[in-house]
Length: 101
Image (cartoon, rainbow, N blue to C red; front, side):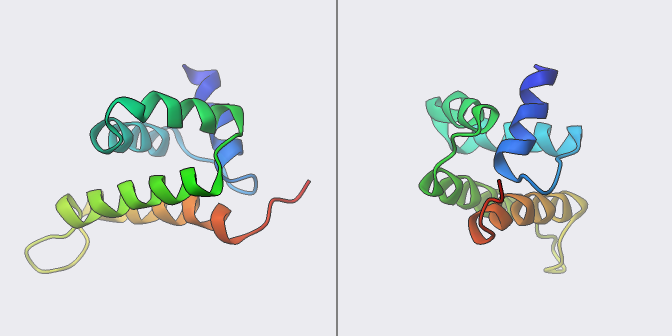
């Protein structure tokens, strides 16, 4: 699945690359939050075919995960929360910045 991860990173954000741990975190979040559709979203990411609505859904999944497990008792991001914020920034950036060919 290493090649799939490499292709996935370029598909979601052409100007940034995911680290392996970020891909694993995305996979974990989608498995938990996207139900039976998690493979569909990962495949679209790998194929470079995530639509704007797909990206919005992925961002919602990451945001929900952050809300549930990414904030500590002191209301500050936990280490996992910081990783989720970074992942959200990467995915969300591709929704904001146009793709350059």
